[in-house]
Length: 269
Ligand SMILES: C[S@@+](CC[C@H](N)C(=O)[O-])C[C@H]1O[C@@H](n2cnc3c(N)ncnc32)[C@H](O)[C@@H]1O
Image 1 (cartoon, protein in one colour):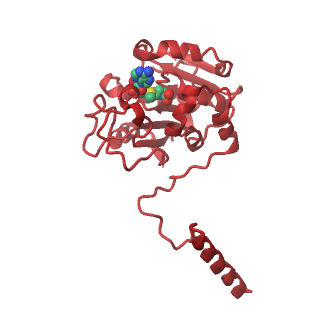
Image 2 (image 1 turned 180 degrees about the vertical axis):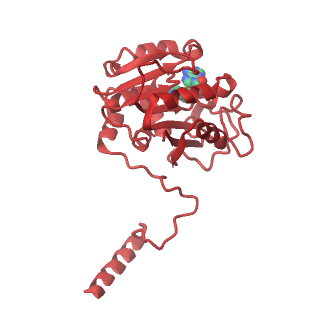
Image 3 (image 1 turned 90 degrees about the vertical axis):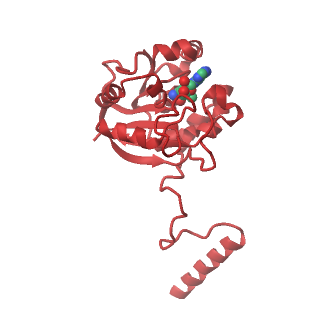
């Protein structure tokens, strides 16, 4: 019997190898070098349906390949009925995905500062807010130092997607901002940060020139605000990015969506 099982396993391994497939994982094999535990995120059908919704705009869909929204929503555990927020919602690509994922029983507080609204977001953001799918989104026009309204309490997740670096050159008091996020989250709630990675040693020196930040700077600030780093996603990593070019939407051109990005899941203890 044991011999038959061994033969069957040997056959399967040989077959996989002959077909160009990987051999089945084996507890004794080391992980490939550089592979993080969470490098692949499985996207459940309900989240796949959110991303595939036929009434999402063509402009939003065009960003999906570079943003991996299914992996993002799955990695941060967004579920129907959740109360979530997004800082720096911009023109609302992420906020609309959150609105769909939390559904009619959930709520999304979507914050923009005056600077964002005046600079580029007002028209596309207010147009997007007219869509029926945005009815569970609360528009929040507030500064970053007090980004959420008093009723936004006991939140499940607060997102900051591709904007944390901008708070440096905009001279936001981030200790205040991070405390406000901490206070708005429930215990066990998640502070979700995605940003463009800067080269080692650059710190925050390229936040305005290249729109990148060395990830240890972000990690240290958020841990100092009382959060625990609970996980890191590798689904937006691009090891071949030299990280020496400006990845802001207007400058990136056809490289948009290819920057090496870090994904941090911080938890309020
Ligand atoms: C890519 S947006 C992300 C907004 C939102 N959090 C999201 O996930 O959709 C963040 C960065 O892009 C810049 N940005 C976004 N849209 C822009 C536009 N239309 N013109 C200029 N800058 C823009 C912002 O200043 C910021 O550096």
